[in-house]
Structures are given as structure tokens and as C-alpha cells.
Image (tube, rainbow, N blue to C red; front, top):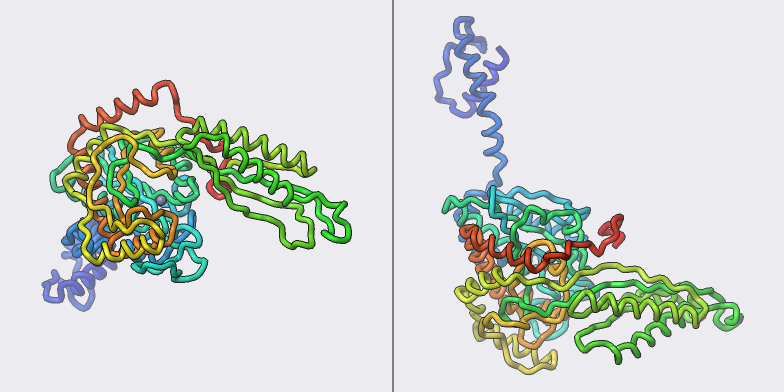
Length: 508
Ligand SMILES: [Zn+2]
């Protein structure tokens, strides 16, 4: 009766005062065996659930008591991600911090989706409707910045920083999902909440791979938000973008002793860049062409045989971007011909312009109007004006109001949110998290994203998204109308990924 002895020790350990049947000198009399067999069965049946209870995070009860939408809970999470800025596809800690918050609240999280270690999908609830929210958490290179100060000063020179406020973005999305899920449980609503942990937004690849791999296939509608300088629901313009690498291969030689033997890849790159500069006179005012030289040669006395420039090609629609790409390919061919080198153009990333769903946008606007703009205080305005002075824009402080729903709301940047909107109805919110007139991808946004002003905007986003998710969960007819609108908008244009079938996030 090893089991009986084990159970008796186990029960004694738990309840030393508990009288145990017929045990003497560590042996159980034969007539008591049936009783012990029953006890063993009960133990085996209960042990797994006891173990599961022990697996609950030690602070689970405390978490359950917390207000799911309090700054006290989410401010430190945003600060943790801010203090550990991680670049695209390397957001290990940031992704995990957010995934664990969801697990504490009963979400199941599938990690490592779409070939990205830092991508995940979290799910709670069951059945229809299935409502989703997008979370981002990657930082930008070289934008390290001390928070809450009005001058450019890195925490660590050259390091990454949250110059797009994604420490706020991911945190608010997770907070909103948790609050909506509690509401769903409290009201006993059917339906599923999904949170998509989407890495590498700054490289415009995370959601594009997640779409290609079908991760949104079972999702009815999706909401998103982004830190901005004013507060509104996006109605455009976010731009379509394609990212290309243009490489030139030449012939090296000593730059003084035998330059006639060489053919400079740097000359080819300069010719190409000049052609594109002249082309800017003949493109639409809505287009954007910008670049960095990734490889420009290594020594002035060695003719460079390899150079590389990366271009972002943007316009209001993917169609216009594709037409500009054709012109850039001709310029690369021409530069190679003139310099007697070879050229290679590789598409690195792409997203189309977003398709904003009007039904969902109205739901977001209604909730945003209820929550209102962030409640700035005098210290926020003072810091904002100091940053504006330093950046060289009018010292207007912070945006005080929510803009009404109307066409044209949105910054002329791009996001792979656009690619998601091609496969699932989507609406997106912008909330002020930085001083008016100051740019994103800039130390000013980093300084604000680690300061109270950023977190005030973050909580407005969290509350608005939570409200909208709850409305959608409890209103299947609204979800149906959103899907009907989406079906009409995309009729006749089935989704086609811009990715090659064998592309992987690392190779992209
Ligand atoms: Zn961003």
C-alpha cells in the first residue's frame, strides 16, 4: 500500500490534525484497504487540479482585484518596455512582458507565429464574434533619449529608442483587451477576444507575414491605435510603401596607382541617386522618396566594388508606388550602364494603403468622444512648449481636443496596419502623446513616450479601445455590418501578398 502511505503522509502534511483511518506503525490493516483504495483514487483525481492551482501566478489574486484600466497598473509596463528598447524582430523582452500580462488574465498565448520569435497571438473566450486588437512594441535605431526633457540627450549614444511610442502602443492594446475580457466574463457574453503581438512594424514586415500565414483568417474585425500629436479616428492618409535595396557591383582597383582598371560602384550609386533626385520634379506631390546609403565603400584609396542604397517609395496608393518603382528600376539600369557596373533591385518590404472600415470607425469615434482627450496638466504643457521651442515649431503645447470624424485624418507615414486591413475590417485610433507639431521618429517623441504625457495618451487609447471591443462583443449586428461593408469594398480584388512565397521574416 505505497499509495496509501503516500496519501496518508500527504494528508498529514496538509492537515496534521486530521484523523487517519486505521494506520498503525506505518502499515494499513487489510480490512482498511478498500477505504485507502478510495482515498488513492480521490487523490489521483484531485492532484492535477491542485497542481494547476499551484501553477497560477502568485500575484493572480492581486491582479484580479486591480482596475484593469488604471495608470498604476500600465504605466510601469510602458516604462519597462521604454527602458529596454528593442529593434524589429529582437523585441524579446517587450513581447514577453505583454504576453505574460495577458496570461495572468487567462488569455492563452501562442508564441513564435508567422516565423517570428517575437510574434504571438493571445486568445480569450470562445465563439463568435471574434474581435481583435493589434499590439506593436518595436523601437527605432539611434533614437535613445532621456524621457521628459526638452533637449536631445541619449540614454546611451547610438542605441535604440521608442521614437514612435510603441512602448505605449503595445501596452494600451493589451490593457484594452484585458478590460474588455473582464467585461465579457462579467456579463457572460459569447465571443472571442484576440490580441495580435505584431513585431517589426518599423520594418513594415510583421503584419505582412502574419497576414500571409493566415493568422487573421478567423477574425471578424480588428482595431488598432497609434501615438500621434492629436486625437482622432484615422480616415487616411496613411501611405502605401515599398522598401527596396539597390545594389551596385563594380570592379575594385588602387584609386591612385591604377584607377583605369576599376569601375566604381560608388559612382553608380551616385548616378542612381541623382537620377532619383531629378525624378522628384516629376512625381505627384503626395509621393515620398527617401533613402539611406547602407554601403558606400570602405576606403577612399580603394575603388569601391560594392555599394547599396535603401529607398522607401511611398504614395497614397499601392498602384502609384508600383509605377514609381518601375521608374526607379530604369534609373538603376541606367546608372549601371553609364558606370559599367551591374545593378540589382530587391524589394525588402511592402504594405498597401489602409482601408478603414466606416462602421468600425464610427464605433471608435463614439467611444473616443466618451473618453475625451488626455487631461494634460500645467507641467505637461510646460514641457511640451519647451520641446517645441527646441525643435523649432510653434509653442502651442498639447492638443486639447478630440477631432470629429471627418475625411483626411492621419499622418503621411505608413504602417503594415494597411496590409491587415486588406484581409479583415479594421479601424484605427490616433491619440496625442507628444507636443503639437513635433515629429515622430524623433527624439521629441521618445522624450514624451517615457513621460507622463505619453502615458496619459496611452490610457485614453486603452479606454477607447476597451469600450469599442466591448461594444463589438455585445453587438453582433454591428460586426455583421462591418463585415458586409468590407465585403463590398474588397469585392473582385482577392488578397495577394506582396511577399514571395519563400520569403521569411529574416530574409525580407
Ligand atoms: Zn509607429
